[in-house]
Amino acid sequence: TIPSEMISIRNYLNELFGSAIKAAYPELSDPPIVITESTKVSFGDYQCNSAMPVSQLLKAKNIKASPRDVAVKILENLPNSFLINKTEIAGPGFINIFITNEYVVSAISTILKNGVFPPTTKKMRVVIDFSSPNVAKQMHVGHLRSTIIGESISRLLEFVGHDVLRLNHIGDWGTQFGMLIAHLEEMFPNYVKESPPIADLQAFYKESKIRFDNDEEFKKRAYDRVVKLQSGESNSRKAWQLICDVSRLEYQKVYKALDVTLEERGESFYQSRMENLVKELNERGFLEEDEGRKIMWGIKGEDYGGIPLTIIKSDGGFTYDTSDMATIRNRIEEEKGEWLVYVTDAGQSTHFKSLFSCARKVGILDSSKVRVDHVPFGVVLGEDGKKFKTRSGETVKLLDLLDEGLKRSLEKLKEKERDKFMTAEELRKAQENIAYGCIKYADLSKNRQNEYVFSFDKMLDDKGNTAVYLLYAYTRIKSIARNCGEEFIKNFDTIKKETKLELTHEKELKLAKVLIQFPDIIEKILKDLHVHYMCEFLYQISTTFTEFYDVCYCIEKNRQGEIVKINKSRILLCEATATVMAKCFDILGLKTLDKI
Ligand code: ARG
Image (cartoon, rainbow, N blue to C red):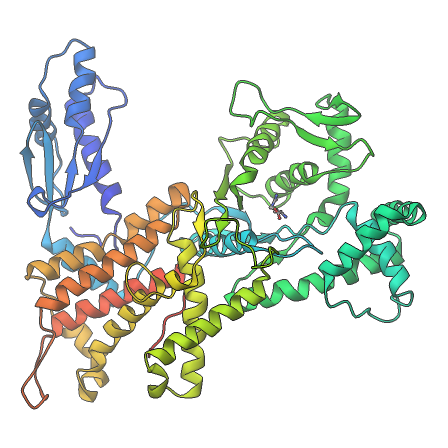
């Protein structure tokens, strides 16, 4: 019987063919199961391409069987299933798989009845670290990428039911705070009683650096303040707090605009944990002297990054590496994380390899129990192919960038005269959802491993795989049912329940078969956390929808424009399409619109 929930077709076929191959060839301990999507309708919906490699493996065992023979034997052992309508052997031994229309209809009906649900997975406690800007330094486009990708991965993990802790590992600790505090004392002696009006923290940072480099007295004081801060002395703590607050204000504006949720747990949180950890590493003999510093190597022989972690600097201070040894321990031992995710630029790949290897070496990380992922992304380039900077060569302020997006999306809406059909409130919503949606989607739709060219023109294009195109497509699909007239809308719930879904036209089936791949897409992303698969899927849905809509009438009108016939089943297919798209947008962090 057909299951009442949507299944991952690929996983299901994997199991089915896996058991067939094992039954056919028990002598092979780990036979390759190769299931792919067919590239042509005549080849069926899916293909099993295991016959060739299986034949090779048999040959190595001196058993002679051609790939075609193998394919025949696999099919003889294939259990009956609700999913498979028929199979065919093609070419040298490909098995073409045609899935049943009954399953397709049932899966679409499930979407209409229950909405879109994730495939069942074992629930895990996940700790994900993303965004993570640094206090007193400009939050830059790299942090924007981390924020956007991290938010989307978090949403996906939450959607499948994991217990997700989203952490913002802010760079709020380290020796630079000594000089910031010393400078604050000088500039605003009254800071303990009255909050200092620092508007531009970067400028403040630069000033204090100049003081630090040119004045020995100041330098001494700065060192003293670091010690005081780390020992918890109250005035220095207060000064540090004030400086962090200024930064926090800016991040929060960015997070609010982009609808990002994060719990702040900066480097400072780990101070006492670092002390304990370092003491332990020392006692257990993991640290090595190196020109005054103390370093630690990962496990040689595995992919350990090739460079050591610096655990103690020559001046006795801790480093970024030390804090990350503490994060991994805290997240596994205290937070009970079963899956740790770190989203940063690809430049830190070596750091994370060393980190994971060192953590394994000391016994913090047992890779058979805890999954760790560094999720790297490439650098952001400007349209000129160079590092993304302002015209004068400075780091682009994220808030300025978001404002620019708003300005451009409004221009675009006005250019298309959409503003004429909207209330002021609707226009503002459209402006925001399009601007932020484009910025997110442009980032998420590219393979994150590659460099990424930031271009407002490209992201605001209404053709191709862009947010504008897809948001428009969605709104149009949603409006189809609305065009069926008031009576229809009023009774839509009953119509949904009572209409028998019929998918007979080739293009109806094609669209439906794309939609029901949703669980497969989720499974695929969970493997390597590449969110762009979801964007490709959305784009595929909307192009397949266009193919369907071009040839399949949903509403027929006469010359006077009056509705003469409504094809209810097709309206339901439109509705299912919108439901799946809405879920994808939601996971990507994009907000849809009723009107654009
Ligand atoms: N603050 C760092 C940066 O700006 C990113 C921190 C990422 N998280 C971590 N646990 N190392 O590059």
